[in-house]
Amino acid sequence: MRRRGGHGTGTRRVRPAPALVLLLLLAGCSGGSQSTLHASGAGARRTEGLWWLFFWISVAVFAEVMTLLGWALWRRRRATARVRGGDALGMVSVLGVAIPFVILAVVYGIGLHDLNALASPPGKNAAVNIEVVGHRWWWEVHYPDQPAAVTANEIHIPIGESVRVRLRTADVQHSFWVPNLMPKTDLIAGKVNETWLYTDEAGNYRGQCAEYCGQQHAFMAFLVVAEPRAQFDAWVTAQAQPTTPTLTAAQQRGKAVFEQGSCASCHTVRGTSADGTVGPDLTTIGSRWSIGAGAAPNDAGHLGGWIANSQTIKPGNAMPPQPVAAQDLPDLVAYLQSLK
Ligand SMILES: [Cu+2]
Figure 1 (cartoon, rainbow, N blue to C red):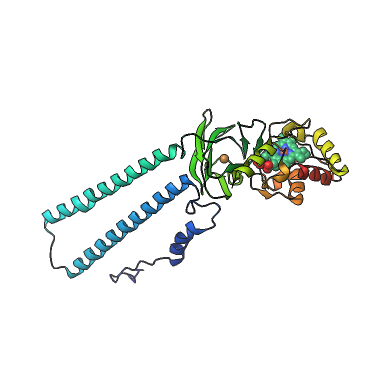
Figure 2 (figure 1 turned 60 degrees about the vertical axis):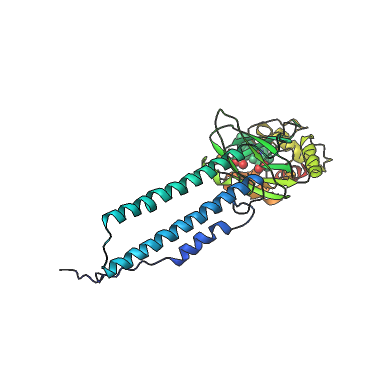
């Protein structure tokens, strides 16, 4: 049986997918706390500017090509004039070679210039130094100016000052990215990479590992808290202190469970006998923005769930389910919440 050419009438319609176009347009507009298009830092402002420049150049090129295409179709339909060989060659040389060459060369030059500018922070010397070590799947954070200050998945910086960030990895490649503040910098095995942060706007900025590093790559987030210098100083000083909270009876029992159980072999709580280094330092876990590097909010319920079996919250993470007796769990949670 022969098929009849139902569509072969000569007019071919291209259907635009409006939903898709809208989705693309809105893709950059979602949320301000982790977005390159809501720059709050000197570095991100540069990449945002570059992004818009490239965007408008692309729009102009697209419009030009579509106009020429429309013109060509219109001429073809009229089928009157013929383009002479010389004209065609001239057109291809100018529109197809010379103009793209100029555009690409200019864009390349601007890109190189910005890349160079991004290499060093505003002002000659960074006022604050931070060392970040990537782990699967969490961030270890040190403040070398106050060597005792160690934390995880949370970085505080003073506003209006350049902050130098040194990046290492304990295992595979990761990438340090705070979209609102700074473009990505990779953490490469056997190497120390450097980047910097600078912002004048106090606020919380979400960061994210940007190099696929395994199962929980998506939950390898962190928070950058930018605050006035005085607040920042108070925070770092507090991080550097060993814990000396006055504990309630329940928290005291929780502490004993922590120190005598398996926890102490993987976690450090400065000021106690727990000095493990496999997992995050928990000296100030009570004030941290999340548990599991953004995997869950830091409240009593999630802490209990995490300790009993963190694998249900963050499957594949390096903390095995813990055999903590049900009656001990609330005490342990109360103890952890007291660590601020
Ligand atoms: Cu990672």
